[in-house]
Image (cartoon, rainbow, N blue to C red; front, side, top):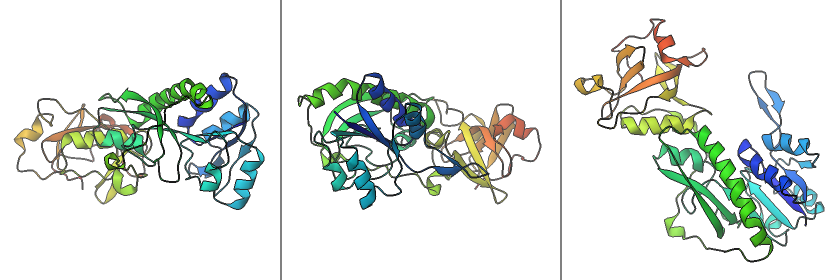
Length: 319
């Protein structure tokens, strides 16, 4: 039986590696084109491409999977089953109809919640306590296909998008390998989604990274950890971008660290206090402590190191 695997980021690699480890006949891999990265804009392969080449697998990298020539290349591999995990493009009906066993997707949420391209980040940013993996059949809609099985993964307070991507990538591979024999035997469940319970998790934009200091301390904490380690949050200081890479967890008894509670007259975004612990900033319901930051034109650093430069003072406002 011929399996074609489609995926792009590191999230997808454990699923591909698992299929190969279990002896499944992966006849080809489809991934996104190489993209320029870093200041020198060097073309870099995707993590899935690197894994595929390591195993000597043919790799297809169409700009558009809907293009007739891309579909022809895929059809030439004669797939009996297509498995996708964070591929990054919506598959047209012509592709969905190719394999006799259908197209499976390893999706990083508990569907029908968080359909779309950024389910892991947005589940953290929205303060969810758990997320998971849904193994599903693909349909023409965006993550609307019938579900096969789910695996629940808790979101701990210390988790970031990075740690959850790693946890969910492993959970996804495990669920795929557990269900695949049942799928191929025709004994797997096929559970329709309830569209009325669906929510959408669109890809992140620059606007999602901007910190709103009138928000609660907990919301700001969740926002930043949902963006780490990929983009981080940001604010404006003296008109320049000031990135925030880590925020201390707000105390359970109050959203602030202490000083902010006595600073009721201060506007949200006001720098309240500077210490070795970090930069305390007024929020909509208290204060938060920034512990890792990145001023414009500088590398990311511990807030305590930045403070020692003496360029930021209490009373200054982050916008």
